Image (cartoon, helix red, strand yellow):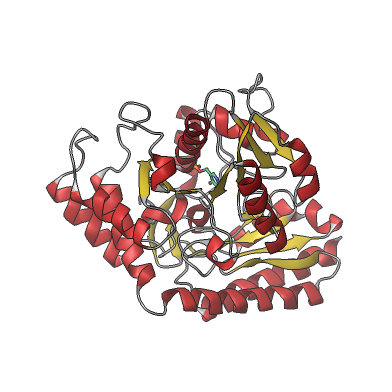
Length: 403
Ligand SMILES: *Cc1c(COP(=O)(O)O)cnc(C)c1O
């Protein structure tokens, strides 16, 4: 017998700083939308490592690219050129508004780079970034300052200066906050951690107009919404709004740690040699994984299927809203990032619903204290969606019967 879930949990809890509340499973392998734990129990994964494994676990094309690159060259730093990172930047710029790329290792680092770029690009006396209530931008000091949820800042004060938060979806309020110090507006086109909360098109278009009028940079944090998640490679493509800077991470490397900042030639020129850097950023193995991931996503029909399956998941969630009105208020989302917004009574049971799903072998989570979040691998099948919905219907029936 190998290590049990319990044994590994005990060993881990002894040596790790307690920053995570974990489910009692030690995952040992994955394939597609399935994970297997140390005791052989299988899970249907509708979380995908928090919207990371867009192509599912151990996609053969990505695994092959990682193995091949790892056998040739793993790391040299950015003092030298390597082809995988160049190919990745070429692919990214060929498929969006940007001409220039900076590669980092995570979402928070990509946002840090974006905040630094916005400041250095705007001159000394313009440094303030306005972001939105309910947003999530990362866990570094600057990115928790940008994050519009007090719980992430609590205990870590004083916050770095130069951040302000506008109420969600209120353009007039945001406009009134713009000052001579403002340099950028930062937002997610659809808030993920905040509870799968979309911003409407008129609002996003209004942000673009405000940025143009007041000479501000519009930064879209597409760390969660990017890489096909919403049914287009980037969510903003569907909104008729082009940002000046976009940040990516999560699904970019299908599980290898990599983040990116993308922007135009003009804005990128503010970052000169020595102004910003990363030892690991654009690491050849992570970059090779990202190249392989992008090639699969860009193949004919892939994104159209994401849209179709997203619509199917959304429709199935709506049927649960109709069946369980005491628990569920509404389904919302775009493509394969969907949320089931819970009623007040439902919110009280949010954690319990996720735990019961876990016990039945299905992974989902509860986001922003308001919605169940479904971010399966983009390769999920309609049969797997039906399985998840079946399990969720069982759980909601159990919970509804008890309250
Ligand atoms: C996850 C996430 C981040 C932070 O990414 P890390 O890789 O955890 O640093 C930032 N913004 C959004 C929208 C995210 O979903």
